[in-house]
Length: 59
Image (cartoon, rainbow, N blue to C red; front, side, top):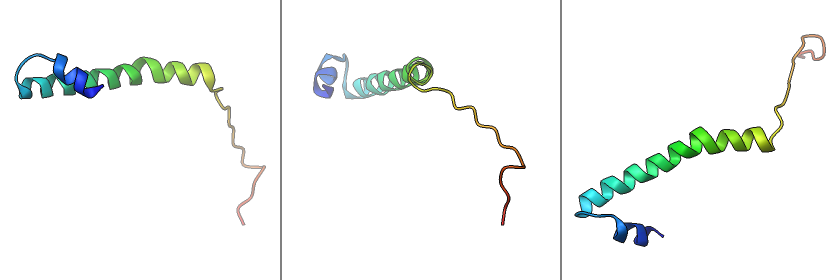
């Protein structure tokens, strides 16, 4: 996968490296902004936790 991407990117090695790092950063940003919140909202129920002072005592 990485070899194919490396051969497809244009330019000398330093331009390829810069483009590769940019692509990886964009993919990670897209995951953090769009995919991970959607997965959390779709597959995980929000946990409603309330803590009251009467139910537990510290010994």
